[in-house]
Length: 399
Image (cartoon, rainbow, N blue to C red; front, side, top):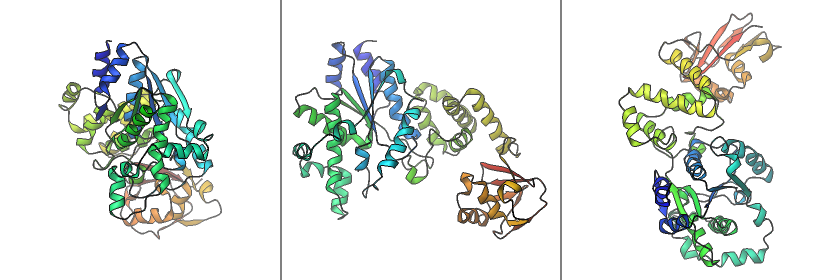
């Protein structure tokens, strides 16, 4: 593929592509590009929002370029202020290490591990002296920092901005200097930070990296960006059942966004899918995503189970089973709330949440809606199917 053809391909689906002319020149020279993507392990799971930039990084790999995945184990101690109205909470070193340990296995579901260079920015920041930090700080002015929209809003509203948050873009930019990256990838909320990397490379007499910003993926609500904070996300590590069900819950308009950015489908192919009934198109999207993270067989099973519940008004035939003896072995009678809490299923995260579900009419027992949180069950108990909401089923037996 010619250098210009590579540029045209890489520009697809991007929101910002800064430094195109310089990148074309490097490709024309035959250089193998060093392409950087940084992820801070603030949470243990990657989400489909991360998949948008990981897909683009894999595209560079497929073209023969070097992918560099930075685990921001040092920068996580500061917390990226991008898009934040308040400072991020501080994580312990143990929490950061735990989260980082899960990232590579998840990232390799998209990336080719044999073509991925993995670095941790504690490698260089852990050795940096305070004098080094002062030298780095001299390369940025407060006025420039306040050009950032999120900082400007916080400053105008008199919301505190810590000095350490001001340092974050410098640290991210310094990663680019240390790695001599030719390209940096990120979400559109990272544009300022990535451009700082270009400036620092220029100050260090290095070739400036191209900056490629990808759109922020909208979450399950179809309105806000996908975020665990909004509970509108799908994680790489979600079960196949939850992944399929969550995709089926998105608005129809959001479905086409997922086809475009997660499956990287062309406009022509999307137009063909739009001729289908929206429910069928969404099932195909959900099945394709589950197949990518699990298998074709698993995807087919989840589609079948979904249709049993939503099209045929039946119950799943693979629901988890619990016995009273294992849940509450000493009790001869118990409230439904106590029994459900003892299952430790995600839908029953607390007794308060279970009571809320019951009061809202979201719990059914053998098909009948339960509305009394104080309801008690007595042994011996006949086989009972309990449904919570649209996606959680369980079978409860006496022993």
